[in-house]
Length: 429
Image (cartoon, rainbow, N blue to C red; front, side):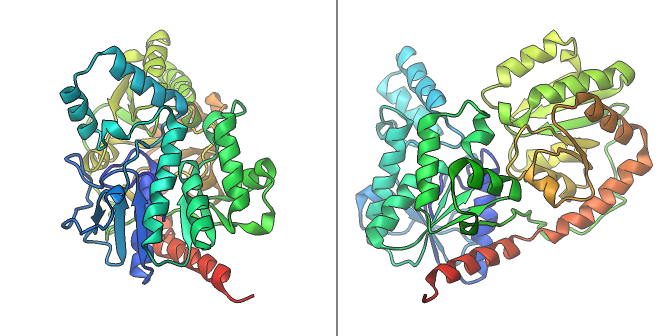
């Protein structure tokens, strides 16, 4: 399995999905070697804990680890500067920033150590890192015994193709997001070309929703019979249903946006709806939890709209802080322009928070007890926010039924479906 994000480092949904899927498949008896572009360790961790490092035979492989919860999984790391949700532009910006600031060698080492990687592993551009990851993954693959190569999203597709070509093992690519989701119609041609190459080279393609499946078929010319849908899920962690949970007492209602603050997630539509809500209901605060390439513009936009004093920006949250923010929220809103699946609404419902989701999301295909709205329809979004905040019976119904509904999403079911896809590929013709 090839990925570029995993706990304890989490920047978004892909790391959470890899964690849930891998843990479930491990419980089902699958033996997995998970290759990552950096060490699975660090001070800023989530609930995942390390066991001791294992011996490795090749220096290029970096390190090998096991995690306590993954009895059948070995994690191998390679020296590459790949980072979650990077684009060619943000990669270059980071390099230019460090150059412009004239950092000393010691300062560079400390900064990259904080980021969980080494300065010496940075190449001329992001695509150099993609190829470096592919080369080092192939080195590791030569020493491992496995039946299938499973690659998550575009930055690992080159590695998946290289490992598959070297070993003759079938390639499965797992699409959590496409370039059209991230960039709209203004796609980065090199990323699109790499995505298309990986999708067409794969023996089978896994999409996280039917919405994503149709994009893969229509935009990348992949045969429909080669693409299956495997929905994401959420860990309930043994939580009992508590419909009488005490809410934090306060005069103001809290509406939450939690996710990357990028074009794909529709932060400007959230603010536009917030402005309309505040025109008729003053005792509301809007919290935007997350970071991204639009964070500065979003803060400025809130100020320009005259609602800056009603919008709080928390930055990126992880672990217990996410649970705390859900504990404060009266409502979660996901106004995504294009959302292949959408894990955060499931996490909100798990925490008894009612949700409003955009119709342009994969989760809208399967979630019944949620209010749905077109991302661009800020009037309807504002009306639905007001309806939930003003009518406690509606809020209670969405909370209770939503919490029951979220329990039908199981990582074990998703893992079992992946194993069925593997077995079909390996079955004698």
